Structure formats: structure tokens, C-alpha cells
Length: 288
Image 1 (cartoon, rainbow, N blue to C red):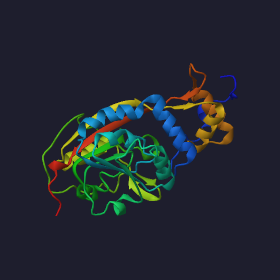
Image 2: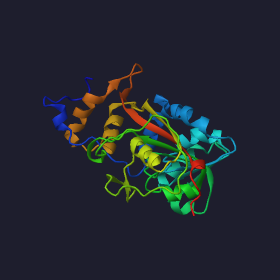
Image 3: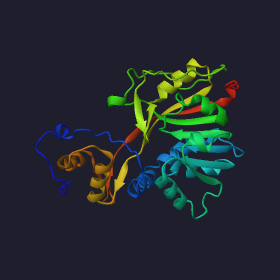
Image 4: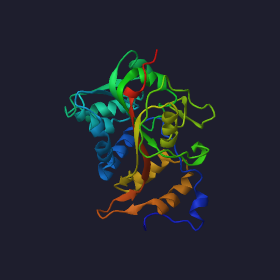
């Protein structure tokens, strides 16, 4: 990689923090996300896992849908799909992506889902990397009648890692319970768009469901979701946006991470270790 400067020092010592946090979508981040999805087939694979658990007569909502990439993949499998996000830029991007009429049954609902979906009912709800199962269980149970589909990290390294990465059976189902308990107040937390939320992982969600005897299927998968770049300028912009690095450390970081593709582009490889959890809401007794 001759056009990236090297550093004689240990690369790891030059990287202060490679865990950035996305709070708001921009035109660039939306484009990066779309190109990563297209190149890796990440959302195609998720759709293969999720679609068999949907029904053509379902009404479905997605919470925190972001730019709606997963929504556009899943909408053809249900009767109607309401894609929700609080971020205006994300909603604008999704509206542009479906302006060609490619998803006629997909509606964009902007705002906090607690407000915009108040008193509404859906057969299914989908959300990805959005801690809602444990913290918002009672609201979810009122919103959804059949399936809640959760895409969650299996674990979290660094400050937000659970004290113990509790394991659960890869696939299981259970009977009913009167109501689910509240999340553990000692669980690590993170900030999502200004709100403090418990950090959920596949094992922690499974533990919550097991404890409350709620039926579910869990599938653990590893999916590639790396980022292609047309040039090194894009790679640097991407690194500035997602990672907390000193400017002098960016090229050092990319020197270690980037690979050259056969077509001449650059690639930042990433693998997501996920739990896809299908929660059977018919096993939950009606909340009074």
C-alpha cells in the first residue's frame, strides 16, 4: 500500500480508540452503508434468515430503521411495512431510495416509536442493534401480536461489554409467563440519540426470555459487513467519522486495516458476530 504513509512506531500504540459511535446519519454515512451492504450481501443474508418467519399477511414495523436498507429487503415479504427512525436525515435517505416505487407497501414514520406507534398494533416488529427488548418489553408486548425479530451483537468488547458473556442454548422455545421483569439496573448502558439505554446482546436477551419463559428461536451467525472505498480519501473520511483517532494516526490505522481489491478499490474488512432472535409473542400472556 505505497500511497499510505507508514509509521515506525507500533501501530497499536498510535490508535487511541477505534470504537466510534454513530449518533446521526449524514449523506456520506448513508452512502457508505449502502455500498457495504451491496458489496458484502449482508442484508441479503439477513433476509434469508428472517423472511421464513414473516407472513405475506403480516403488518410489520421496524424500530430505528436507519436508512432503511433492511426495511427495503423485508418489505416484499409482508402486507405492509412501517419503517421508523427518529433521525430526519435517515428518513430523507430512505424516501429517496424508494422514490422509484420499488417498495409500494413501505411507509416511512419519523419520530420516537413510543409516540408514533402509540395505540397501534402490528403482527411483527424488527429492530437491529437497538436495545429495546429488556428496557421496553411492556411497550413491545402491547405493540406486537406475533413476532419480534431482533438482530443483536453476540457480545461487546471494551467499556460496554457485559461483565460476563452469558451463554444460552442456540435454539429453544418456552411456555408463557404473566409478564416480563424489568432490566437489571446494573447492566452496562450506552447513549442512543441522547437517551440512556441498557446494552443488550444475544446472550443477555436470551437470558431475559428464558427467565420469563417467553418462546423464541435464536440463531448465531457471523456475517461479513466490511466497507469498500473507491479511493484513500474516502477511507480517511470514513475513519474520521467512525473512529476516535488523532489525525496523525489515521494513515497508520488504515495501513494496518485496508486490503486492496482486484478491481483496484480498497476494502476495510469487518465481521459482525450476531444473534438473530425470533420471539414468539403468542407465548406471552396478555398484559393487563
